Length: 127
Image: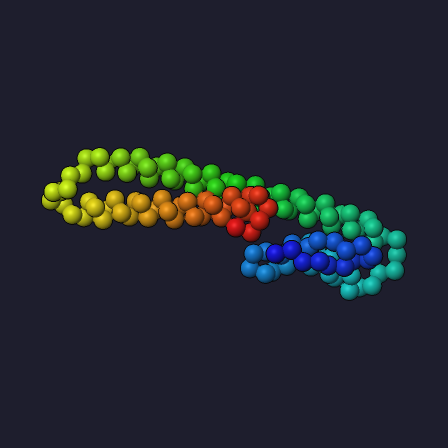
């Protein structure tokens, strides 16, 4: 969720964590704003906070991309295990084999959902 925060004269965008907590940059920006500083350093402080915020966002997006790749790799492994489906017959005496296959399909669904959320975060959203 993006909120508008005022620091000095120009409104700036402030990102919150998905759970609603403020980022460190947001807390610094709010603290400086509440301090009502009357100096020429406001523009420099804004520029610094913008740069730090952009770097932090890039790190969050890179971490999300790593998570998405991990989920892709997990799905590839599960798909290899699902190859055993070709060996099953309808009259399989060990019915637990079907439960295991169902569990693997559920794993793919769970990994895909987590991977999709991670990809959204990597794109700059909150997944």
